[in-house]
Length: 291
Ligand code: SF4
Image 1 (cartoon, protein in one colour):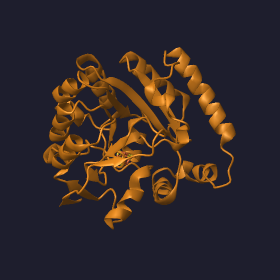
Image 2: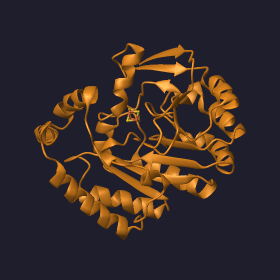
Image 3: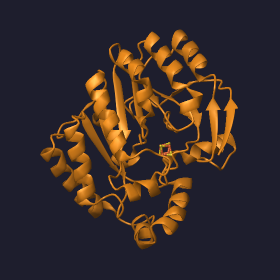
């Protein structure tokens, strides 16, 4: 693993209005050591002139300072932390960028969304609690599977899904944040079993999550090639079926219809049959870039 410290010129990246339920993206890092085989954000490394999205991480060591300047001058709106990386990936243990970022957000009473696959976020629970009492805070754990063997293959650098649920449970009890589960991407043949989907909804209900946001996997650009390289080695029995399902002209609509019919049953059973501010604004789950 290679880590490179860089100075960032800007912090907040303005998003096209109306498409997503936040106004800006804020990325503390470039690259992500969580290594998810379906990661949609791999494309972002082209701007760093690097191919090694999972293995070469750029640390924006001045990010809190630049953010403070931008919040102080002009930029107002809801911020999504981690559009193309996970803010709580392993290097955050020592880099400690988030505490100063959160202090600046507290100072400016800025609403935020964080989605993560790490319970390192609990290190900053007091700061998150403080911000959640001043502004809208939405914390989501992305949870794709309760099968640890599969989780270790598809998200090798992450903590277990159960630890992510326990993180949400604590946040729900100890802060004023909205907490949710991003059940995405749902990967055909790997994470789409009834048992897996039901267990995720059941645990979300048990910990009193505010919402569950499901979404089927999409594959584009660099992600597509990396995903199939990995599945060939890791899931030889499912690899060909996945290739067929994700062939360019393959009609996935019958599959999607059956999947979402089952998900709607789960929503009713487990009390998530309502929309919230996050999923109301999402036009298409396949387009969603939140995980
Ligand atoms: S946690 Fe998110 S950004 Fe990091 S590798 Fe996984 S999908 Fe990509």
